[in-house]
Amino acid sequence: MLQINYIRENTEEAKRRIAKKNPIHIAVIDSILIVDEISRKAKSDMETMQAESNALAKKIGDLMKSGQKEEAEICKANSTTQKAQLKNLEDAYKKTEQELFDLLVTLPNLPHQSVPEGKTPEENVTIYEWGNIPTLNENRLPHWDLIKKYNLIDFELGAKITGAGFPVYKGKGAKLQRALIHFFLEEAIKSGYNEVIPPLLVNSDSGFGTGQLPDKEGQMYHATLDDLYLIPTAEVPITNLYRDVIVKEEELPIKNVAYTPCFRREAGAWGAHVRGLNRLHQFDKVEIVQISSPEKSYEILEEMAKHVQGLLEKLELPYRILRLCGGDMSFASALTYDFETYSAAQGRWLEVSSTSNFENFQSNRMKCRFKNKDGKNTLVHTLNGSALALPRIVATILENNQTSDGIKMPKVLQAFLGFEMID
Image 1: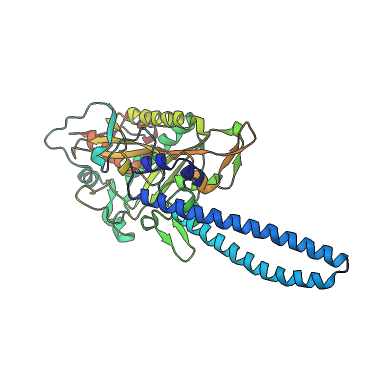
Image 2 (image 1 turned 90 degrees about the vertical axis):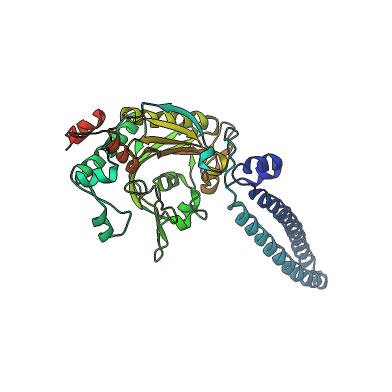
C-alpha cells in the first residue's frame, strides 16, 4: 500500500509513475487527496473540540472545589452538548479515514524509474539471453505427447480425482519432480537462504499483507467456511512471517526459501497455449524471499536474478530475461524480471520465474519495520522470486532433451534422480 505522506508530498511524481501501470489510477490519486484533506480537517476539528472539552472538565472541577455549584451545573450542561458534538466529529473522522484506506488499497505499487512504458507482454524488454536453441528432428514431440509416451504424468486420472489442471505424477515423472525440488532447495541453501515449511492456507490478513487481497481474490481458492485461502505462491506465507514485526537492522537481509504446492484458479486464462504443463491449477514451486533495508533492495534484486540464472544454466536450458513494462506488471511490484525458457518442440518461450522488488508496498500493509541507525522505525523492502516453478521447467527439459533413444536428463539432476535417461 502506498503511503499517504508520499502521495501528498510527491503528487505529480506519483501520478507520472502510476500512469505506467494504468492512467486510470491518476483519478484515484485525485480522489485520495480530496478525502485526505477532509480527513485532516475532521481530525483537526476533533482535536480542537477535545481540547475544549478537557478545559471545560477542568473548569467544572475547579468550580465544584470552590463551592460554585450553580455555575458548575451550567458548565456540565454545556459539557453534555460538547460531548455529543465531539462524538459526531469522531464518527466523521473515522468515516473519512475508512474512505481514505479503501481508496489507498485500490492503488497498485509505483513502478521503478527503469520500468519501460507499455501495456502488453509484447512491450516487455529483453535484457539478456543465454544458450543455444536446440535443433530437434522432424519427429519431435511436445511434452504432452512425451508424457503419454513414457507414462510420466496422468492428466485424466487427476481430472477424475479433482478436475482439469490437477495432474498425477507417476514413476520417473514423480522422481523428476522430486529431484528438481531437491536441487532448487539445495542451491538456495548454498546461497544462504534459510529453509522453511509454511502453511498452505492463509487468512485474509496474510492475503492483504502481500497484495493478493483485495486485488486477486478471484484467482485464489477460498475455503469459505473457515475464511482461509489456498496459497497461490509461497511468497504469501513466507513474507507474512514478518507481519507486525520490528526486525533488527543487523539481521537484514533476511533470506528464506520454501518448497510448496501452489494453487491458482486461473479463471479466464485458458486458451490455445495452455496444453499439458503450460498452465495448471496445482503446481510445485520453490520460492526465495528476502527482507531488506531500502538502501540494499535493488542490489539484492540483481543478486536474486543471478541466482535464478545460475539454476537455468546448470539445467542447460536456453533462457531470456525480460524487464516487464508497466502494463504487464503485478499489482504489488515496483520492478519485475521475468525469466523464460525456450520450448523447442512448441517453438515458443515459456515463463518459468518472476523475480520482483516490492519496495515498501507490502511492508506498509504488513507493518514490517526495522529500527534504523537514528532509532526511527523504518519500513523494510520485500523481494521474492520463483527459483523455480516446476511445470514449464519440466516441459522444456522433456522437449529440449528428447532423442531417438529417450529423454536425456540434465547432468546436474542425475545424482538426485538415480538415472540418466527416461526411456
